[in-house]
Image 1 (cartoon, rainbow, N blue to C red):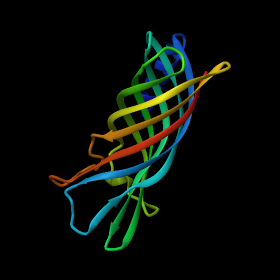
Image 2: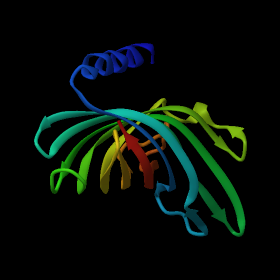
Image 3: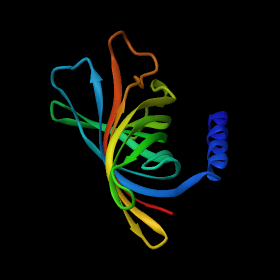
Length: 192
C-alpha cells in the first residue's frame, strides 16, 4: 500500500507542473453487488452512500484531457432474504484515471471513460467486520458524461458516471461464486 501511495503522489507532483486544473468533488451514488450465482429467495438491492475527493486534469490536446482522481468512496449493497435485510458497507480509496472529451470549447457537455483501481479499507456486514473474506484491491471500468460551466477563476461541473467492477472481491471464493461492485454516481465539483 505504501508503494502505491508513493507512486500516486509522485505522479500528482510531477503532473502538477502540467496540470490544466485542480478538482474538488462530492457526490452521492447507488451501489449494488453483482453476485453469482443467483440464489432463489435472495434479492440484492441498491444502497445509497457518498463519495468525496479531488484530482487533477491534465491537458493533452484541445478538447481532450486526462483526469487522475483520488476518492473516498463508500460502496456496498443491501441483501433481502425472506424479508430479513442485511447491510453491506465497503469503504474504499478509489483512484480513477479517465479520458475526458469535450464537445465544444469553453462551457460544454463532455463524455468520459477509463479505469478505476481501489484499495479496500473495510468491509462490514451489519457492523460485523468481514474484511478477512475480502481481497485488498478492486478494479473496474468507468463510463460517464457531464457538463462544465465557467465561473470567475474556476469551473463548476456536474457528472453522471457508471462504475462497473470487474474483479471478484472475495478472497477465496468457491468455484463459480463471485461478488463484484457496481455504482451509479452523481458528482458536483469545482475545477480551479
